[in-house]
Image (cartoon, rainbow, N blue to C red):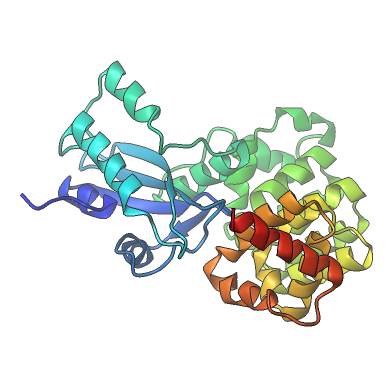
Length: 337
């Protein structure tokens, strides 16, 4: 029998169909060709977070029973999957299940697989968006919370009744923005819905592609928002690079590039850092934080393949401030230990 070395190979051999979703930075689908290239170590993982690939695999058999693995696998210095942890996980599955990952499990097997060192638990918001996205892509009905959330956003339910809305229902609406008049209701809800619902909408919208009309509304809300709420609207612009840039400039000019905002940009709006001026502003603001904070955030964003060369180039920028030069020196000192 051919040795099984990749997750794709294992799932294909088991005669299952499967889909892959990144759950590290933003909840998003990874197409099969891209995942095969990642698994063959031909390309780095596109959305690394804290040195790991965090993704979900949804797979199903001929009976259409669906299964999910939430996996957190280490990446090497080039951002490629480290083969050893992946092989260890595959060995664990083979040991517990043999060649069929869809077979019924005993309580002991379920506990052993659920508590493996490569699993992780997504945040509530990410899990809600993931569930909504999977249901939509597999042609399944939305959750039971969907109807009430839509009725609230349509204005059929009083704004004060927001406590009865579940985050899953809001996520269901957000991943279906292109259906019926969902986007129109989401747009108007930023005028009428309770603040808590607006924040929940932002937490879901940061993971989906939004139109320019909706992005413009979110940008306007960001300008008007209290300081403590601006980051929610910033992250909701993640899929719209142009307005993310404008939001970044607004926050910079208002001297609001604090630790929370810097983390938001690193985690969701990292496309901002592709622009040279914004990248310089960001690093200068980052250098005003503690050395450990600078080291951690820089290490996280420099691992993003689309940013890596740009950020490494900044380490040699002769026009940087003394403060940034000192922070970079501290970075090198920590790396050499």
